[in-house]
Amino acid sequence: TDLSPPERNETILSSDEVSLRAYEIRLIFIDALRFEYNEQSKKGEIDGREGLIHHLLVQSTDFATDAANRGEPLNDWETLFIAEQKYLHFTFGRAIQTLFSPYLVLKKFEGDDRGRSREYRRLRRDVHLALAFICAHQHVQARIKKEFVGKDPGADSLAAYNVILRESNNEIKKAEKVLESSEENDVRVIISHLLCIILLNKRARHIEGLSAVGFLTNRDAHHYLEEIERALDHLRRCSSASHGEMSQEDKNDSLRRFVASIDSSVPANDGSLVREE
Image (cartoon, rainbow, N blue to C red; front, side, top):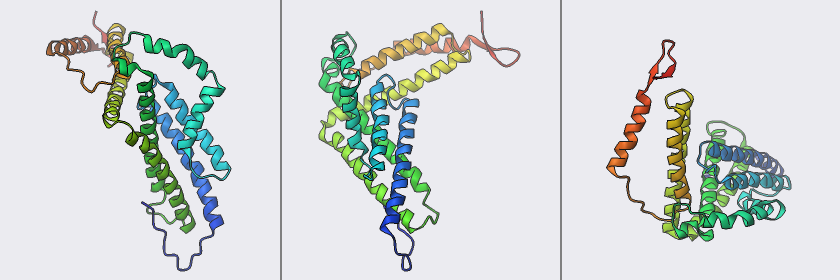
């Protein structure tokens, strides 16, 4: 929603002033998008094992900055695909894809044939790009809006902000078309798998933290991280909405081993953790 400028009965907005202020806010907005993409990657919200997604998103902000410096409006959804073409045609990206794609498709990963297909992997990547893109834009809009709400930045700044807000919303609509034009069930499955990947990545970082402070032995941590990696491999190459459920026996065994590994750590006199021999 546009922010309403103050009463303007005495204020005549200069189009040059608004354009200059919009240019400044546009560059700030793009820098904030770059920050959001890096934060998403750090938090595991962008799958780190698919580095191309993060690379394209960050690269798109570089091209968007160049466009803004030429006086063009925000157009980072288009520059996202410019970044992809640059990657494929002017780097080793095409050679790497050509070399390894058959291996990735034919390797006996868990999953299903459709989930391992080139077409489904492309759809999955496009959905991930769209979700990360939309989320970043929404976060940046909220952050910049805080700079204006409750303050009196001037009518020209408010008008410029509304210009950038409309540009951002237009870009979001373009990304949403990817989700709307794809098979609804496919999008639902890909999103649910992405949420699982985020949770598994968070669990992996938690286990690494427990190992670092001595709550888990390296052997136990390695075992759990291997389980997570197998689950991630499956999720990245699966198009199924149903995977069954872990048996109660397996649940109990996993919980028992985890609790045993925690119980075997006891506090030392200095408050640190040591392993019982």
